[in-house]
Image (tube, rainbow, N blue to C red):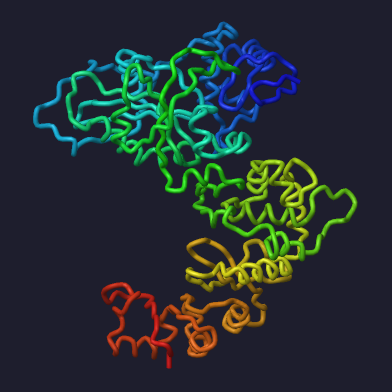
Length: 554
């Protein structure tokens, strides 16, 4: 076993270099060389794709990390470790070289910073951007490995500034105590910090406040652009300023905070070397609660997926341990497995499944990935007897065998006891379970009470096949404390008895929909002139008419 920078290589091979949290050894280089020998006709892109699949090298959104692998191959080639095939095309539109403009063009005298735009680079912009950065920045263009985003700031058709953002520093003495995270947490959350590795105002420009304005516009869109490209947001940004050259004035003007000086060491492959030039580190949170989220013991909520699945709530805010915590509640759910061969207690699996679902996981694999980010100490606090999280198969088989009615009853009662409904509206809606029908039985229907802003189901009940949702609404809502809440339902539940039940028994308000299935009530609303009463839409268009308070529909 070879220990390199906290990462253990089980192959026992000599480390060559590090890329993010991955350590690449002579064994990896041998794999690359074997592929080059076996397939000399392959282009670099196909080689990178094959290696990413073989090493399971993926970005946060699950896509293959081809760009980082290509950068790794270029670094290996620069060291003479491998010989890459000649590039088959020049970067640019349809493989044709892109003309590079002059370094800079003087701006008109009447130019205004109100017209300043900061945008990501396009493929056609990249050669010009690299040449300007290499020519005018004192550090040159440099090589970026891993996640990175480049921007150009323009005034009209003129380029005025260039920026590059990359992965955060592995560890720094001023930043890490300021955040307050431990080393295991830092390893899992470091991708949520971006480093401003290059910032260049092109020569010949003398616009007051230009630098701070460029930084401000870049930070407004950085997290969203990172989310689109790599599948996760950015909560904190950092940069390192050489005090021998700059005072960091533009960063201070843009709201960045200096934390102190580094010790004068720099990363070199798997270790550090002393370069003797300490830097001042500046940081700025992009999330109002960035420090707490970065240092939180439990994995933060996942970002929205491509299908729009939103995280429900932060698991760090849930009462998991202690008297009447979630663990105590889940201990009431019977274990459906045979006792022999059990590695993880059922309450541990259920607690991890609930936490992953609240954080945005929407599959068994997503639950396993979320649980894998937890430290062994957190797993022990959840009752696990092993330092590793349950696998996807463990989640799948346990949850498939579980008694859903018992589990739902326990979880709903726990939510009610902790008053997690306060401050939210409650929507009652029925759905048909996809894939639940068979040749002999109809599809199964469920009536659910949902917190729409959280996407959280707090109660649900099966609808018998010989009736509909109407008689199931009161049994569904009976155990829930609805005082002061607003309950919404579709036109099927627009009945006087339901309205009286909500107002008189549950002390709640309601928003019902009035359609053509209630012609008399709809005509009365039109006669009273309530069609424009909030929250109805303005105007007298045809279609559904929401109806809210008066207290009685009679």
